[in-house]
Structure formats: structure tokens, C-alpha cells
Image 1 (tube, rainbow, N blue to C red):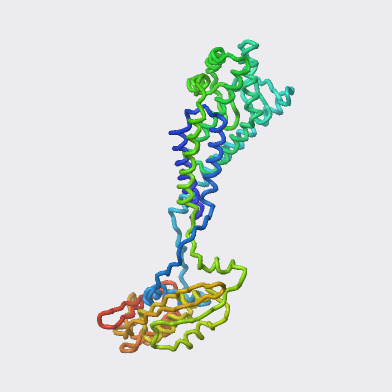
Image 2: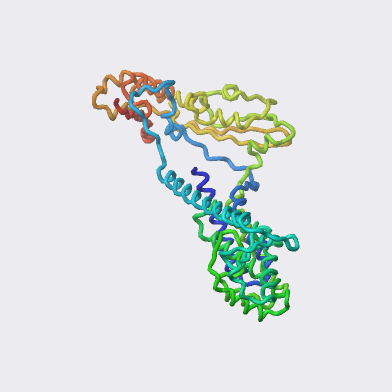
Length: 473
């Protein structure tokens, strides 16, 4: 749900930016078909852009390595018993804000879905209730109530009670509605309704739909007016039918509330091709959104890129720098690396990364007191060979100073300390810390999920305190 909400937020940002661009630059242009294509395209792109992952390449960069102390902040994951030792029920860690937002979204989604299907069903009922006759491949149905004229898919609906117009005016209205049908404007409306269904909370999307409907009307007006070649008489017809108050999500009605704007656009002088160059402004807006939501930085030496190569990469050379505790050969063998062997960066990174159960290279040094150990791998690719260099910073060893027990009220501290393997004056050891944690959990006296070992380093004197924070059952 969290990812879905983030996706919807990114979609909404795209819609807002595209909507703002259209409102400020294109809405008053008389390129009706171009505006129609633009509005439909940006609506679709708003849903696609956040889903895209477009790689762009950068020079190989070394990732910042973590000290052993930083890795130990996740030590609570080091031991998890096979069966829960706590007899108390544990609650779920729920992000209530995300849950509430998700429920609100589903309620709004359900309402819009009901409204959409209700509109479709209402029109379908009209097609079954009244007879139709076909003209030029278009079905015309006379109804007794509702708007004066409207169209849906391949149907034109005409209200018999609103026919107080001349034969010439009637032919213009029919031509207007036929334009909606032949241009498949209902499909545009369906697309917009599905988009609004998904992003019902975004008012900008409803404004985009309104602008699209206006463009439909402007284009149909232009065709109907040209049918008789008289803009003035057609403008009067628009005013004459302006009293219609019907509304529907999906249908196109002859008389809309944007009467003044329709008459203005009907008599608008067509812009020249130079003005049409404004549509090029969509490109920088599109690039901006792609950079914001779609571009993914890739390293040419990343495991994915290496794995996609047709020729398997092999290890050319292995170099170690900064290590004094173990030999180069020992460390290479510990990682399972040898010259001429296949290069598996994912496996190497796994061996270098902190592993709760031990076995990683950091734990090898941690058990000898090197709390501040860090390692960084660098690679150089030549053909299908990869030369690897490991840069190690061992740091100074840390000696245990204090072993602290906190959170206990019923169980004596001395009893808990008997379960602890770490002793004052010894070198810090990760494996002893894990075994101590395991013994405390297996005693059955404490909540296994809330036992938190804390490592408190003192770099100035080379010591470290170990604190076991327990929660009694």
C-alpha cells in the first residue's frame, strides 16, 4: 500500500504540472484536435512516467563503507529463536497513517467506481427502453426526458420535448452530435473517467477532463457551423439551447455551461503555424518529469551490468591493503576468491556485508576486538578481467570496560550476568555478544523480541561498554 500511495502521489504531480502547462499555454488555442491529442497524451503519460526506469551512466564510485560499530546497531537480529519464547502476545507494528490513507482511498475509489457504472447502466437502459433507427451508421434514439441532445458511443439521443427548433437548426444539432460519434469522443471520456477513478483525490484531473470536453465541443461546433456555413446563426442556436441542465459523466450534450467560451472559440481566428510551435514546450516539461521520477543512476561496473555481459568476467588479480591481522592469502581464501576464478560481485558483497549469523569478513575482525574495522572494494575492468583491490582500515582494538544490565526488576542482575559471556578486560568479540544474547533469550525470562544489546564505544581510551536492555515477562 505504501508504494501504491507513493506512485499515486507521483502521478498526481505529473498531472498537476501538465495541467498547469495546458492551462497557461494551450487552452485558448484553436488547434482543437491538437489540444485533444495533447490532453489525452499527458493523461496517459502521467501514469506511465513514474513506472519507467531509465538508466543513465556515471563513473564508478566507491560506496561509503560502514564501520563494525555501525553494523552492530542491527545486532538484535543476530539470534531469532525457532519458536517464540515469550508467552505474551505481540502486537503488529502498523503504520496507522498509511492504513488510514489507504482506507480513505478505497472509499473514494469505490464511490467513483459506483458512479461510473451507474452512468453506463443508465445509458444502456435508454438503448433498451426506446427504439432506434440508423442513419449513416449511427443509431438515433428519441427519448421522453433528459437533456435535449447527447451522444454516447454510436448513439445519438434526442429529447422529443425539446424540439422547438427549426429544421435547419435540427440538422446542425445532429451534425454536431454526429461529430462526437465519428470522432469517438465517448472513448476519450471513458479514459478520463478511469483516470479519475484511480486518482479521484486529484482535482486537477477533473479540470483536465473538463478542458477535454470543451475541446470536444469546440471541434463539434466548428463542424456543425461549417455544415451550413453560418457562424452567427449557429451561435444563436447555442444560446437557444443553453437552458439544458442535464449532466452525465460519459455523454456529450449539445448544450453545455461554457456557452460564452464556445461562441468565442467558434468565431476565433485560426492561429498560424508559428503559434503552433508552442507545443514544443511540452518537451522540457516531459524531460523534467522523466528526470524527477524515471531516471535511475547506474554504475557501469554494477553487478547487473556485469551479469548482462555475454562473456563471463574472471578475476584478474586480488590485492589487499591495510591488513595486518591476517595474510592476503588467508583473506582471499576466506572470501573464496582466486585468480582466474569467476567474478561474482553479488557474492563478494554478501561476504563483506554484515550477516547476523556471522561468516562475513567484518565478523572475522570483530571477534579479535577490531570494533572500527572498515573495508572497501574497488575494481578495474579490462576486457573480461576484473582486478580487485580491498582497502582495509582495521582501527584500534577495543577492550570491554562495563557490562550493564538494564530494564530488570524481578530477575537479579547477578543472575543475568551469569548468562553473559563478555567479561570486563577482554577484547570485544561479536560471537560472544551473540552467544550472550542467545542465552538470555533461551532463559525464557525475558521478551525475546525486545532484547536489545547496545554497544557504547569510547574511542578516546579504546574501551567499549556493553548494555543488555531486557524486558521481563
